[in-house]
Amino acid sequence: MANASEEANDLLSIPPEIIQHILVFCLPKDLAAFSKACRLTRELIYGSEDQHIWREIFLNLYDDPRKSLITGESSFSVNWKNELQRRTEAESVARRAPDVEPHEHVSERLRALETFISAVQQALPAAKADENAEPEPSLNLQWLDKLLKDSRMLSSAPLLTEIHLHSRLRAYISLTHELSTDEGRITVRRIQSRCFVYDIRNYKAANDWGAFMTDGSVNWQHIDHLAVVVLTNLRELPVERETIATKPPLGLLNTRPLSAPGPYFESDWAGVEGTWRRYVCFMDYRDLFAFNFSPVANGPRNPLFFHDSRFREATRLIEVKLHLVSKSELVFHEPPRYGNVNPRYPMLCFSGTSCGANGHEAKVEGHVRIGIDGSIRWTFYDLMQGSVHNNSTLWCSQGVQLGGIASAAGIVGSWSTSVHDQGDPVGPFWLWKVSQIHADPSDLMDFT
Image 1 (spheres, helix red, strand yellow):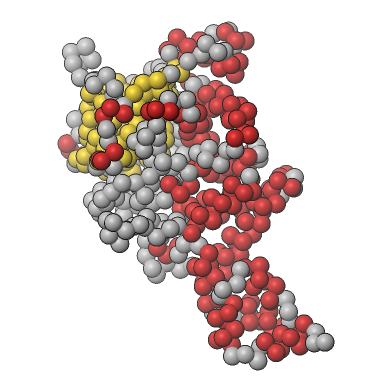
Image 2: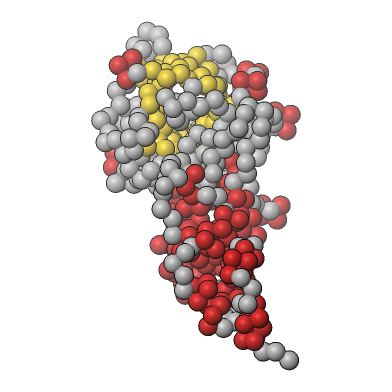
């Protein structure tokens, strides 16, 4: 009987280009096993400077990173072997996660989470060959969505060192991986998120009155909590009111760049122009004050406050219509002078209207830009018209796009007053773009 080395030698008698062609259809683990057959097979896999095999295997499994909006050019240099090994290792960490002690694998877990975020950022844009065609699927997002759902890696509490990466992925997933048996865990998350979102200490000048860190980067733990509050409220949406235009598109597949309704133009890289839907959630101000400052429910800020069956939180669906304007055309707000983080995506200014179920219309102005950490940041101001308000801005909202540029998942953030006085009301919002054919004003509503 021939030993492994003899079998390998027989295989290596095949022309090298034929062997390479066979190997590109292998999985990474098969490639690693083949390399262990003998010195010659190891040299074939790891000894060559040519990355043809690694590139072809990578592109069989994942999106081409050279086509992402992050890199934006086919000349972008990729170390295919390193990238393939990195994702293979990250997948292994996720699948082992339920069976190992997290504290014993801190660096491996952190690297895996960073790899998963990178896969989302490098997802293939949902560009269509023509208006009637379906976009090519994103292999990155299909792989990651299945992996995180199967492994349940994000179901357990994160380590302190990974909390923002962990929260970022949970915000992207938006409760779409929860099972019917997870109702108790969802209830706990809802209360935890309400405690965080409605704690007015989390909104101050140092974090720009929103879900941001002091250096200007996104606080993804805060974004995750904002998303959970809105989503758990929407679980109570009357069934007869559920339509394609009354719920934001959820899950990793909807974080894909350019997956929101178009069309898209270079002058409107963020997909600003069009019709949007926006959920705004809020507590009665008396409840907000009681939660933050009173001894009710062993308070202040005791989670027991939200266990009271009499507690109610209002949710309002609003229609927003936006169009681009020049900075000089802004009437009631002036964007700060930000550094130009990415010349390909300059700050865009917009104006428009917002209208709720009561038919009252308000003017809206704002801007969208690339943040210091590469995130897409949106800022809105609402103008309350009439002599009572002296045509002054009353509400200010700041949010972050979930995933890539112009993702279908939309923007999650917080709202408050534009003056940011101590004790002012705060709450979460979710904004997403809808197709004009689905924008029926009768869908607009308030519910508790």
